[in-house]
Image (cartoon, rainbow, N blue to C red; front, side, top):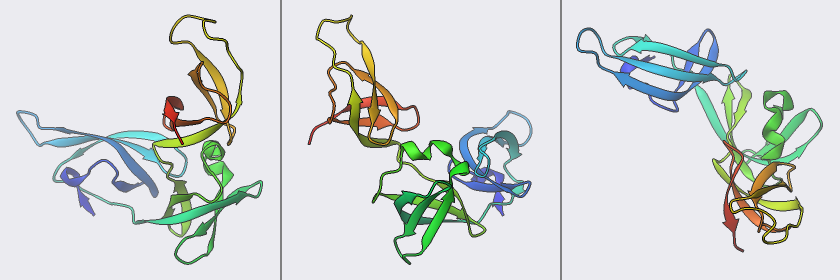
Amino acid sequence: MIRGGDIGKGTVLLIKNAPYLVVEREFVNPGKGTAFARVKMKNLKDGTVLTQTIKTPDMVEDAEIDTRDCQYQYNDGENYIFMDSQTFDTVAVPESLNENLKYYLKEGEEYPIVIWEDNPIDVKIPQKMVFTVAESENYVRGDTVSGATKPIVTETGLTVRVPLFIKQDEKILVNTETNEYVERVNG
């Protein structure tokens, strides 16, 4: 159990027998009455979002989750197959959990997997990742106005809009939350 005033961003709460990750927390201390936290949470099983107001002295049940670092191996058509880096056990994460994961998983890379009641419920993707441009159309300088972009496809199949100067086989940094180009990566 956790006090309402101790809830912070990243806390996992158990609400209606489902784990919810706190993504936003606003502390409110009105002139009269009890202070409270306005909390926005994401269901880790189905992705639904819930907003709730919790008084600071109230007790809320926190979910006991485990996070394991696992190396991505391959996709078998139904599951993303990972290997636990500590025990070398195989961990199968259902594709239906997050269909867009395929755009962010690279063979051999390590990702934290969130486990709840012995079942994987989430794969944590870094906020920024480096991708290699697999497909890109060539544009001639002066084709359009400044700030123009073009679509490219990364080695994982992710489509990103990038500046015209980005060429095939170059590495780019992408914000995985917005799928936006951040910068070109040298090396």
